[in-house]
Amino acid sequence: MPRYKKILEILDNYEVCMINDLARLLAVSHMSIRRDLKQLQERGLVQLAYGGQVKKRFLEQSPLYDIKETRCSASKKLIGQKACELLQPDMVVFMDGGTTVREMIPYIQVPVTVITLDLAIAMALNSKPEVKLILCPGEVLPKNRACYNSETIRYLSERITDIAFIGADGFSTEFGALTTSQIKADCKWMAINRSVQSALLVDSSKLNIRCRHKIGDLSQFHHLITDRTLTELYPNSTQDLRLSQ
Image 1 (cartoon, one colour):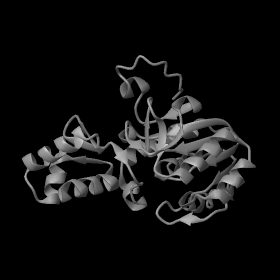
Image 2 (tube, rainbow, N blue to C red; image 1 turned 180 degrees about the vertical axis):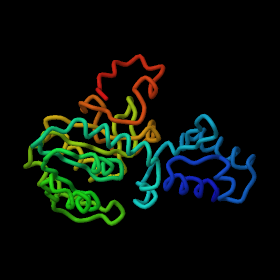
Image 3 (cartoon, rainbow, N blue to C red; image 1 turned 30 degrees about the horizontal axis):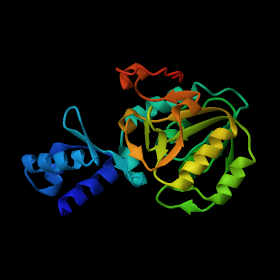
Image 4 (cartoon, one colour; image 1 turned 90 degrees about the vertical axis):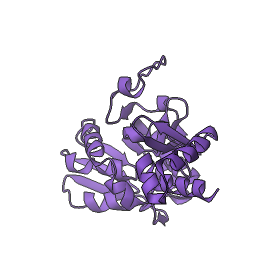
């Protein structure tokens, strides 16, 4: 059904959308959208959350960078500030691509060396005198505004960092940290495995969003930095969640 495809395309760009917004965007009734969503939910393609929120259960591609910039901005600022509490003078730090990791920049107050593959992060860091900046080689993916290819992986494999700050498109205790392409997953995995510590930076809207490519289990990260506590994220969990925040 064409409308099902359109709903999934909208959720690709917005990750989370309200039922009322879907009805308005598609110019159909609230009841029609609810019937469509029920069918999509039964097929395991979307997830209906409290308050009329709709999430795509599987995210096939990352939303456009301009859209990601405007989403959950307050949460990302909080995450960026909390992440910078882990910094110590003279650390060598890997900063992954994405708008969440980018929010660390205003809170970097100590001299560090930063290795990044993200062009927007590199441009912003270039104006901070306390930061020594190293930009990873590789082909720039315009949609991500970052370098992700085999050349990037090889470069990261030859560098040891004190801490790696990693972004993701989705996460859960069951599937771990996830992203939307194998090359992105491989670059992130390499950065984690060449770092003494690693921190996953994700806002809570990405909880239980599934993607096809796994970065790693949550247990591979030393820190989970998000805008909510682990108890809030997993109120009914019986698992031993050892990540620090």
